Image (cartoon, rainbow, N blue to C red; front, side):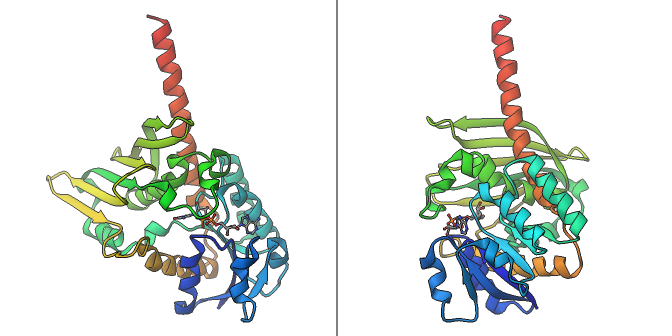
Length: 314
Ligand SMILES: NC(=O)c1ccc[n+]([C@@H]2O[C@H](COP(=O)([O-])OP(=O)(O)OC[C@H]3O[C@@H](n4cnc5c(N)ncnc54)[C@H](O)[C@@H]3O)[C@@H](O)[C@H]2O)c1
């Protein structure tokens, strides 16, 4: 049994909390949140409660932590947890910038601690089935992934999601990591080739189309929308060279809002423990997703400069 502490008890924490009773390998040992009302239900249980995560990290009986904090706090919390010798499962995005993600990777490698990013779509049953249907990537002509939602329906009481300083940006920073990681899990490492971004009146990237390519030249398109008015659409579509279209709805069978996350996070926790026991994982996937997000924003700036140069040369 790996003893785990959860830091941050907001929206996404409930899926981790639901996973522990069914896990044969992970035990919930402690919870931490600045908001006492969130730790209160654990006061009369064998789960320790904290409001300061550094205190939780000092507990020698805790082997590993799950970091569920707002995005801008991930780097510091991961750094602290690794410094206290804890294995880390961090929510996406691992960090807000590439240098920070590289630093964490180095620390995890040096300390031989697991640094794992909770890319929950890797454990989505419809996607696993889709992956199994594709026997060879040579048969695939193109892949599309759709990540469309109205962000306000996904955020908790706090509004940090809508503050680019805390979130890291808009829809690309928020849903980009999950979408890009899902694609990399399906078709291998990717590079961004082209990006089209729609920004709202506050300058937030609210919608984006990102074209990517893997090492073999297989192309993929990511559709991101933070202002989708028709509920939620999370899908992957493989277009095959022989004309077949293989599609997978990540929300298949999820009657209640976000209910697909229950089976995904149960597997996240068990795979995190497996990484720890097999001494694997030094933030590679988390770093890769951070790089792709940054590349999208950098390409937008480059394309804007090219446009301005072309206009001024007319
Ligand atoms: N909401 C989703 O659908 C979703 C999905 C996937 C991933 N995530 C990721 O999960 C992470 C958490 O998101 P969320 O939606 O649960 O956020 P949230 O705002 O609902 O929860 C964050 C929690 O952290 C607590 N907190 C803040 N600072 C703290 C500190 N210094 N010490 C202890 N507790 C502190 C807050 O009180 C709050 O309870 C984010 O990185 C997000 O990108 C969210």
